[in-house]
Length: 114
Image 1 (cartoon, rainbow, N blue to C red):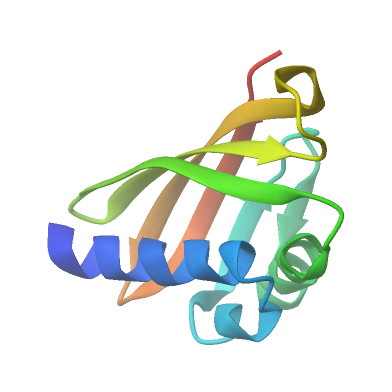
Image 2 (cartoon, rainbow, N blue to C red):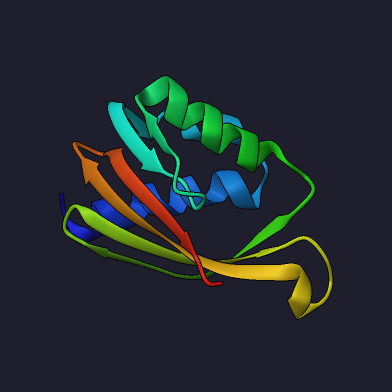
């Protein structure tokens, strides 16, 4: 995949969370996708990955703020801040490391800054 193709998928992925529209994720996740969430739990397969991400994207209890999205071939990085209140103490910064194949997400690992 080209950097531009990967960046397009990552921007569409990010839009689902920014707009609280979980259905935007349906076209982006491969059948064999594996997600390691920020809590260290692993979610195997498309259904499990979508269930996790759709639950987060659909929640109105918090807001994501994108900081940076980069792509290099089939790899991508999304840096973000999650806010659940107006102060810095009511937020956390994190990063998603993504791998794509044929325009679909096949692997994602999420980390937060403690």
